[in-house]
Image (cartoon, rainbow, N blue to C red; front, side, top):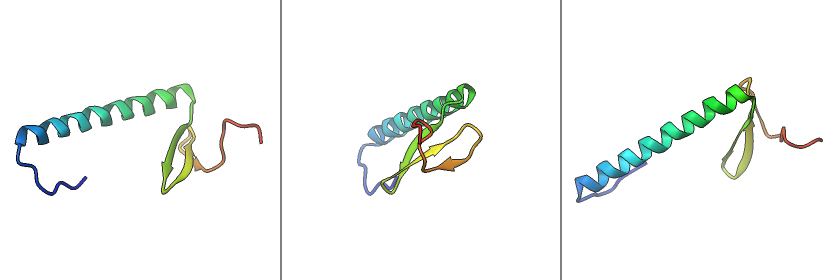
Length: 66
C-alpha cells in the first residue's frame, strides 16, 4: 500500500491498525480452514485459485464434481 500524503497522523495510525486486524483475521481463517480440510479460495489478476489443505494451489475447483 502506497501513501502519497497524509496530513493527520491519527488517521494513518487508525488505517494501519485496521489493516493489522484484517490481516490477523485472514491468518486465523486460513489456519482454521486448514485444520478442517477446507480449501482456501482467492483470486489473482482476475483468475480464481484454490489452495488445498496440503498446500497445493490449483485452478480446478475442488467443490465441483468434474
